Each structure stands twice: as C-alpha cells, then as structure tokens.
Image (cartoon, rainbow, N blue to C red; front, side, top):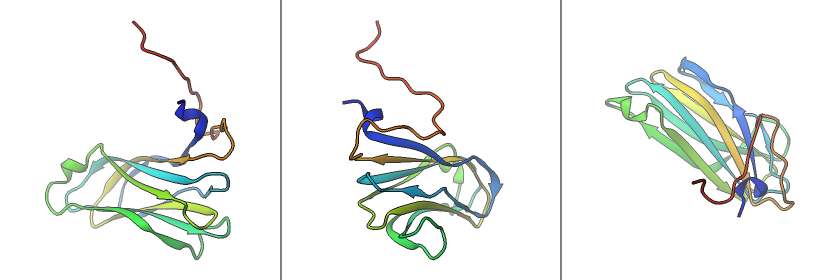
Length: 146
C-alpha cells in the first residue's frame, strides 16, 4: 500500500514564534475524504504553558460560528514544560459530520513556539490523490536499499 496515493497532506499553519495566542489553521474541504488528522509540532514550550489543539467544523467554508468537534488534544504543563519541547499534539477526526474543518491551537498561560500544523486527509474516495501545493516534493520507494 502506498499511503501517499490515498491521503492528502497539507501544511495548514506555518511556524509561529513564542506567544500566548490562538493559531487558527486553513480550512479543509472534507468532500471526498473519510477523516482528517491534525498534527501540531511544538518547539520550545515554557513552564506552565497550556496547549489545546481542537478541530472545529462548519457547513460553510468559513471559520466564523464553527461547530466544535468533540475530539481535542489538551496538555497542561504545571511544572517543567521541557517534556513538551519538540513534540506533537494530534487530533484524528473520522467522518466529521460537516464538510469544512479547521484546527485551533490555543497557547495559554505561558509562551510556546509552534513548528507548524500539518493536516492529513485520509480515506480518499478518488485515488490517487493530488497533494496540496504546500507539498513541494514527494517520493515513493519499494523495498529497502542495500
């Protein structure tokens, strides 16, 4: 099985410097896909930082008045946040119910650097998929080189 033929990879949020703010991703059209996984890459995370990655949905191609999807990944750091440095938060939503989805990464209480947010739409009805323009190159190999 070649995963790159049955899923679509998109960079939905660029890297962001240290801050306490919400990052709202680009909107994805789920028409033709069964599910989506959002992956937020952390950088340096300060002590006591509260990170919450939530997926929201909408019937329109808009981030206004969204419907929160019940799945979210929350990590609360009350002590040393060094364990959150260079890690990931991820939320996988299968059959979101509404056509358009986007992610929200809330950085609260203390600063966090974000390396970006990637979305993987999977279960494509039409294969092979065409990768998003944010993917500048891809390759597929069979077997292991010796």
